Image 1 (tube, rainbow over the protein chains, first blue to last red):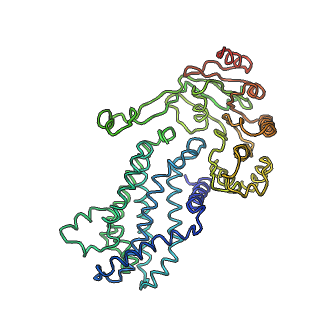
Image 2: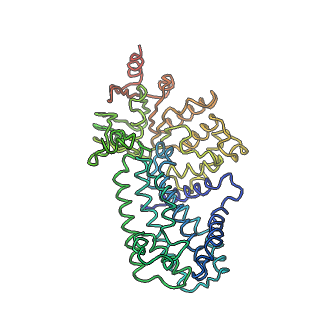
Image 3: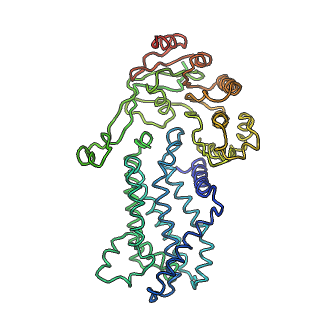
Length: 252
Length: 245
């Protein structure tokens, strides 16, 4: 299925996405680095005294923010990918699935490129990478599968009902605060833990923190949940896309 | 008898719109049916004809009759709701002026992007780039500028140049010649003739009946959601012009 032509197509679309995103801005690509940094500073000043019990709060927040940015950007870009490429979809014979995939690739590329300076910053904040560092690779892949599946589901529906993307943008901040990014589970009263654990993202951020914060391998249980959730969500997204694909060209 | 290049048999084409026009929240609760979320609109039905290799066929018909939809089906972008389309060869569709052109990117960047959107391997770019540049007659300085600074005519030059850079098996042209100055229009017609003489099959839509007569040997007339007439160009174009009198 992936031949050199479609590889070339995906790569060129991903490059275009990145170019377009930072066109006409002076700092351009550096914004992918600066945005989480700004949030880090805000959270550090607002919460570091209140959350003094969290060991190395800055590193804790940074690892969460980097991956939240990846999740949030990927879902936004993929959900919009059909609508923003309507002109191409209607006039050029390109497989429609190229657009969500290329959106994911450009966000993954963004993450990889910002990872180097972030890693330097993490090191400065006291992170000492060990072998468990490499756990971040499969964790990232699983989070990417989850993000793609979820936004393929929402993005396909969004072609028909534009409320979906508006709703997603509205719920995005709520989901941010429902996910332990700026706080730890210990800071939440025990009776509310079950609510936080209902949030599928919780397991992925647990995986990210294990690798990049506490330098341990994620537990078997965490791996199990991540694999199960990401594949299940992807299957739902893929099925929805396949089912509704024939109408996309006339409804974008 | 030689094998046909495009064979269309009992073709019906439809598009699907989301359920019964959900325009408000109220509609969702009152008229939404989960069992049949899509409404089917039939554009064309019972269309059958064959196009032989090297034939240049004009598609005639009033606005909204389904010319573009038919072309999209031949290009493989729309699946028939019934019937069959067999296309033998690689199709190069030029369905709109500036299709896929990204305003923020430069001319050169757009050429590379569009070549990959048309499904060509990157290796081809070296071969295609000089052809596109010389055909478009855009200067190096212009091609380095973002396309948003181009005039409509310049955009159509760029777009058309990429579309016809290669000698395609089957070329589809949908009303894209209207813009561009007289010199460029003439150049496009010459290039289409060149492609025709090279043995390619061409499907051509234009409301300029003189253009159609000039390059097409045959024509298909669409009316009332179906194929009304298919045959020799002068005969079909007479029927078509008579519908307006």
